[in-house]
Image 1 (cartoon, rainbow, N blue to C red):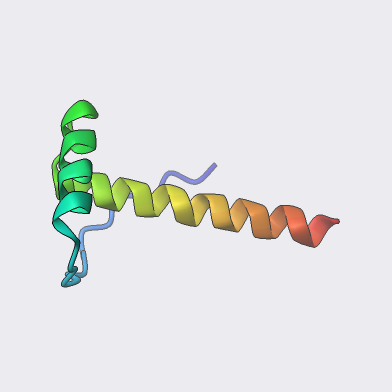
Image 2: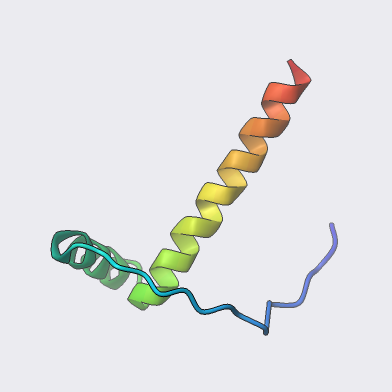
Length: 61
């Protein structure tokens, strides 16, 4: 497996969240020892991986 260097050129995205979602993410991030930004990035990365895997599995059927 190829070992990719971490992305150094990150894009900024303005994001509006409800107060309740922000609070839930803040608590989750704290539980996982991440910043809120890090938690959002982690969750989005996991969702993209899951989607790619699902698309690959669907195309093999």
